[in-house]
View 1 (cartoon, rainbow, N blue to C red):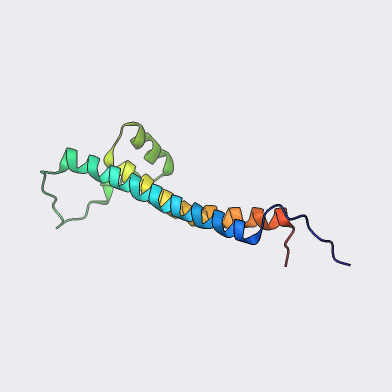
View 2: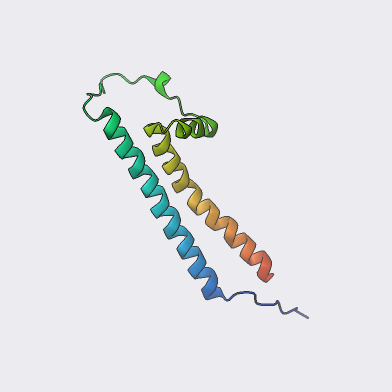
Length: 109
């Protein structure tokens, strides 16, 4: 005999929450990247970039901790990379929320 689960929220509610979560995550990450781009252009807008040689030693934000240290200094590249991280973590947050909603509803398929 199957147990009926208590419905804390309907399927439509979960869809609305997930849609809002994705929308807010993308808009927030886009805003952070835009802010970083504006800061970058204000500080380095008139300089010319040499694209002939790639120097990988300039990659100072290879870890999340380094990105947060750069954000404390309002470094434009760190702010842009943080926006990209927000964009990456948005669907991950969606999956985690979906798992929790299935567990709350006891929907094990």
